[in-house]
Length: 332
Image (cartoon, rainbow, N blue to C red):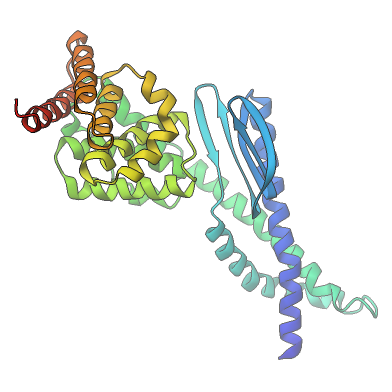
């Protein structure tokens, strides 16, 4: 039993660094392709190194320890997330321990006659071998999945939904598959993009019970990112400001999202930007006159539009509802 525990400890000593190094090498390969394609790294973290782009300048500092490598990059007007889930890595390491034991059982006899003084090194080598072998198998499995399911992911459905909406298809007629079917293999960015459409759909249908589920999921992911602002997800942040301003009343949470997108939101002259600012200004800052001015600006934008869609109708409805609330509370 003691020998088994010793071997297990030595295996973990070998497997954990192997998993960490393999994660680093895998992400460096991704990073190289990003740089070659003209992409720009916005965030990079490995071990205690923490690099971030802040106000156009790159800053390196010591951060919380992370055994796996993760980064965020932009390519053109899109931003992509390459974060790895620590919990998944821990579970995978546990599986490595089990699978590594089998690999060690196979490899150990090969080193049995390597000479005295190397007995302690054998399980370490087995652990390293198990880590890299299983990393390779895992990477090959993901690649195979992507090849088999090209076009069958949340991003593909999100783009198809946007295409249908841009062609004038009513929201009620747009088919949105249960994302749970694709959730396990979707990135957090894909989930948020898809939830952005689900949020507007449930708001349009006044399905506040499901709307809460969508908002809670978005909030959990963004809090996991420490409210880091990703420009391609601007509308998701807008949704969260709106939701926590007037539906699930939480001025503190609404303000966290507002501070993350403050610069863009204050300069956003579109109807949805004016609407979100109006709701936040009225419910969180208690400024009805300023909120009225903002919603009137949003209504002017809508009146200038030549097209009519569920989005414009939804914006009109929400702006109108806020106007009625302000007028009633002011006794007008």
